[in-house]
Image (cartoon, rainbow, N blue to C red; front, side):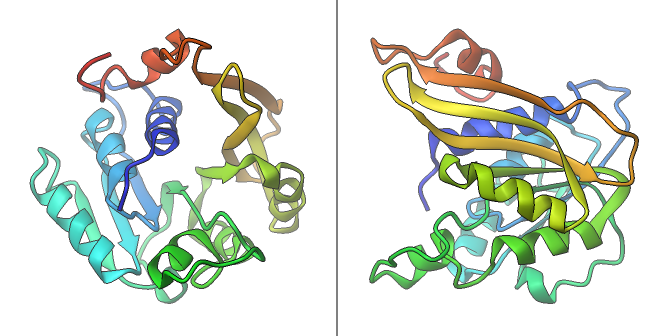
Length: 227
C-alpha cells in the first residue's frame, strides 16, 4: 500500500494534537481503525512512547505489511496489529484516542481492483458505521480523529451530530497554493462533554514553487529525513 503525503500530514497532526512528546506524558490507549501500512500508529507511537495502540486491519496483505513495519520499529512492544473486521471487534476496554483514515468514496464508481475498492469505497465500512463504532469505543473524555476528502465537508457535520458526537476542530488542507481544498483533518468528542469552541483552520502543503510550506515542515520535521 502507498504511503500518501496527506496520510503523513494527518498522522503528524494527530500526534501533535494529542499532546507533545514528553517523558512525563500520561499514557494513552489508542485504536487505529483500518491501519493499512501502520503509518498512523507508528507516527503516534514515536511521539507518545508510553501509549499502547491497537491497530486493526481487515485486508490480510495490508495487515502483514503493518505487522512487519511495526515489528521492525523501535515501538514494536507498543503496537498490537490485529487482523480483523472492526465491525466484529470486541475490545475489553474503551480508548482515549481513536484514529482512522476511513473509506473515501461511498456511492461512487468503483475500480476493477477489489483491494482498492475496500480501501477507498464502502465495501467494508460506511461512515455511519465508523462513527457508531467510535461512539461505542471512545472513553467519555476521549478524542477521535478522522482524515476525510473535502467533498464530504457538509455531509460529515450531520453524520457526526446524528451519532451524538461533536466536532472540536477542522483543518482544511490544500495540496498547494494553486489548488482548492482536498482533505479535512477532523477531531471530535462525545457531545456530553464540556462545550468547546469549534475551530476551523487551514494548511497548505506546498507553495507555488512546489516547495513544502513552513507549517507543513513544522509538523513533519520529526518524521521526514530531509526537511
